[in-house]
Length: 187
Picture (tube, rainbow, N blue to C red):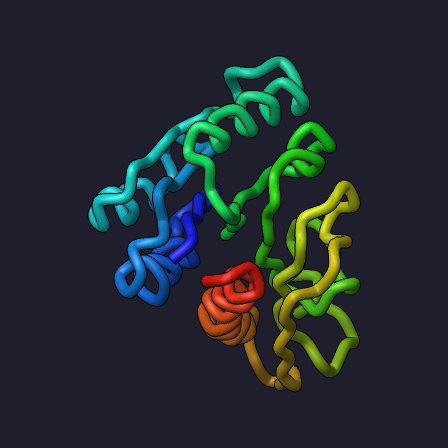
């Protein structure tokens, strides 16, 4: 199996999903990196005996300085792929031109790029919504799509019900995307 570094910022639900569906079967996650020292995902990674690196973005004077430190740290692990699973940072070309990475985004791109995509998708007039996994490029949520999955929005759903559908699809297509990408380079 190829080596994966995961980047996350929050509770780590998608990280936990990768641990369950990829790591426990293949031992692929060699490190989890967070920008948030209080991220819930830290405990999830440590429980699976995955090394955790905390690189707090508040310790850097600019996005570029943070991204340079992040690129250096990732390089120490020499992964085949970096997976952004809830990493809440807008990345600069310092990162995007040096790291081969994919990102999970909770909308059918190109719709609802950037933050608050779930809420904006829920509040929109769109009838079909979903989730995308794409290559990370200099353009925010603009890289080539690897996988997408959609569903028909139920106008009676609450935001919580809608969000639960998004999370369910995220947990399905992120591991499939990782396997797809790594199998293309020889899993």
